[in-house]
Image (cartoon, rainbow, N blue to C red):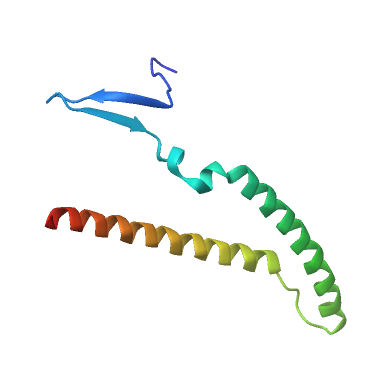
Length: 103
């Protein structure tokens, strides 16, 4: 790729002689590791929700009500949850940085 080598990890030697292990954080992320399983479960849940939603909307139409969008609501709740978890992780990282500075 244009002279760029792609590797799972590398050792970086700094100008002052220190060595750093450089890796992608996904190697430590449990969610990414189980993403295939999560995607499979998510797909099955989405298909089941679409089937339920279809039945619910059939009944709603009989009563003259507008259609419900359960999958959109579920995706929005999932997004809110992931944002909450990301904010939590950022807060923990900030706490660790501040604690390190005090010690």
